[in-house]
Length: 259
Length: 368
Image (cartoon, rainbow over all chains, first blue to last red; front, side):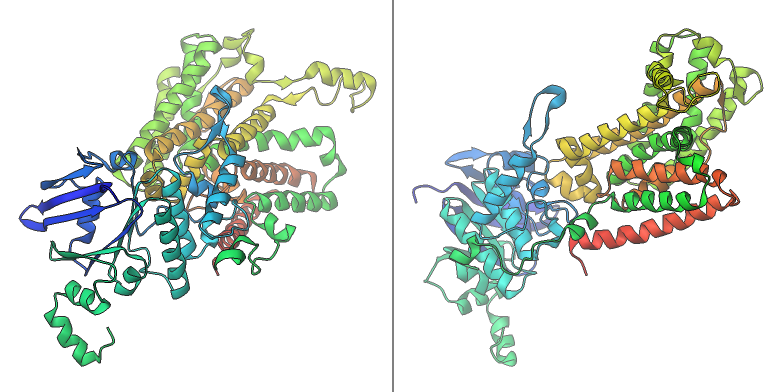
């Protein structure tokens, strides 16, 4: 780990008189999974939208590989190698896996009038990358609607990586999944990380974060409450930080320590 | 799923039987429909329906409807409707008549200009739908009336009071492009077949079928091009994507607005093509042309497997949907059955097709 791929320095974001982010610093190194934790309303969404070029920071700056960058649009961020997998996944259930995989960036062969969609290439590449992520498709022509939530998540991740993501932002990828599917997605994150991609894993589930995270940053009310490395913080401590400590301790007492 | 087992076939996935795979093709319903209708008429209709001349008899109206239906199907796959295509036939016919009769333009100028005029109206439809975010159903319903009205008023203005403009045939007499848009193709070939005794002839030795009506060739050509574009080009992928989920498509970099506007323009151009063929064939244009055709076109597309919600369907399906139509409209005249049953058939077929499509969609997406 030499220098971070992306470094967000003291980012502030104001919407009118609402201060959504009040100075958040965050960085991602190649091949690490940096978890961004926070309760609802902590500013996680605003923060990743700033990172992926949807919002412009009101203050602070973003550096990629040491150089300051200014994204005018999500497309620019994407071209710079920042890929975001949002919760809706941008997938169309009625279309085949390979057509979804290449949606908007279809491989072609031939020239001029005979320029056509390269079916064979699309299908082989899709099958290959899905297999690498540990998912065996019956065929690449299978509709995405037939896949489980976890598998769809994996298609979205594989697609982002294939199209050259250096930083992969995953917005609550496990929030709607069952236990087994969550395990699959976490395994996928591990594989992506092994390829040298920096993963930003947004979650409010401490257990999922602890399963794959290398570092953990907690956001609360638009501020960073600090970053901890793996093994130097416990689930309880993270939980407390997320909820703002005190109140949760009381709640936990009344719930018998089940949260 | 870890390590070795992940790389082998998943034991829970059964090899899919052929039937199940066929069930997932959007055009299956329409092909099955053609088979059923054929069997029905084999039993009930006069045997002359299935001779060469009978075939041309029902294929000709099928082709005319099919040209509209293929445009409608492409647009439906792209997630939008166009209820104005029937009126567009009258509107384009009026424009075409004005160009040829009133302005005396040759076909090589009149035809492209008619197509461009129609495409512009299509673009207006599309832009309104996209910019306002209103359902295309409402926007194009408005244009159903607007275009019909303009055709009526415009024709009266052009002719000095009539809603019919005659004299197109005289105006295009001898034009080198006329055979491409009217009459029959391959008449030499058919005459040759007749002389060899391969096809039926009249007593004087002339073939009963002088050639293939030109609209059938346009119909087949259009179906092939539309299918190629849908299944084998990136653009086709964008059409499915735009219809399946416009938001997801546009997040993935598909130019959804452009695709949709282009589809509206294509659909309107299909209507204009039909208008040109019809006007050249009849030698006149009429403000009532294409009346109710928007519904028949959409029904043929739905029978062909297009989902009303977009994102699914095929041009080949619409092709067979239109053939079913032609077979029934003309086929009933070969039977003793009252022809007015046609409308009952139409409604029943639509209902069946929609229910069938619903089942297919659930199979494709694996919903239960």
